[in-house]
Image (cartoon, rainbow, N blue to C red):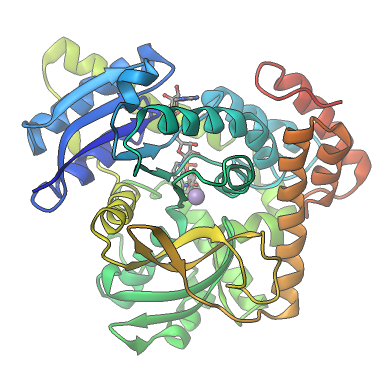
Length: 442
Ligand code: NAD
Ligand code: G6P
Ligand code: MN
């Protein structure tokens, strides 16, 4: 049986133990010989590494685990690269969320101005990572990328490194499908979804369970309860109060626009005023995560170092880890599994531009995704997608050309921002906050 060398970029991520658990749980089918954690922050990665080492001992002690900050050691002959870098860490996520809120604009990790700012930080570190793969990895490497903002990253990589073997994915549609499965009382693997949109900007059009159309039944439920399942079968991930509120908010969108089932992220574009009203401008999701998920992992390491005791199960994050491994296995074994992923449109959605990076179902083969043709989408959906897509395109062009004007256009174009005056104020504050990270904008 072939054994694979796999590197996790952003090894110090809060998600690493969960991904490693899902990966090594598949050892009978997908055998890893070497697992490398690569990060630019050795201290953070070494801490998370303490937990990862325990996970390896628990699930596949034959695996050679390497922690490194050296690109050659990290990427040498790698078959798979799982990318999950957060450029600027949670400290900068906090800025992405709080600066827009100062101006009563949605403050979010990947949507609105926060997403555009995070995009401007992430494009060039991702290019550098691709270049490491080209230089050191196995020539048939595959990067499976979770690094956000995935829509902008996907678009920029396609433009700057069109030949890179990178597949951009998101766990939100599959997490919604997990909740749908709980609502419909089935296994999420028995659900087949039709879907269209951009990353964090899309809709489910049909839900089949073992071939049977369940769309109308599900829509009736979501209209009343959002994506909150009837019992609390959920996993650790997406289970705190703010996530439950997000899942519930889908009901408002469903009531007003009953045609399709929305991605939860549509709340930031369609319910923006209410999202701002409910937000605490001094304590955002970044603070919740720093005080929650991030603190929990570092506290567990301290406790383990002091007592030798650790409860690993609290780091097993369900679909997030499972999904990236399922996608990688379909690439590795050419199994043509159907998953929702980001691809260049090229006619998949007939009335959107060819060069849009869309999120649609695709069969995952050894040569990459083969997207399913969605056909034409109705005017309302086409219109708001085009606006968001143009905003993302402009921010990528701003980064490449170093253009202030294009950045201002990107911010002004975004549906979350009410005027060019507000766009300029937010952009100028963000330039100041991102001095260390953004390309120069002139
Ligand atoms: P985290 O801050 O806990 O971990 C990210 C790690 O990336 C840090 O250890 C950091 O040092 C490292 N890093 C930063 N720049 C790097 C670079 N240039 N090269 C290598 N490593 C680098 O963050 P997290 O909350 O665990 O999230 C990790 C990433 O995954 C984020 O981008 C997040 O938005 C993304 N994410 C995406 C999805 C999705 O659906 N696409 C789901 C969950 C998380
Ligand atoms: C979902 C999205 C990710 C995003 C994450 C944030 O899973 O698909 O793209 O990074 O939520 O979750 P958090 O718990 O950090 O707010
Ligand atoms: Mn996502």
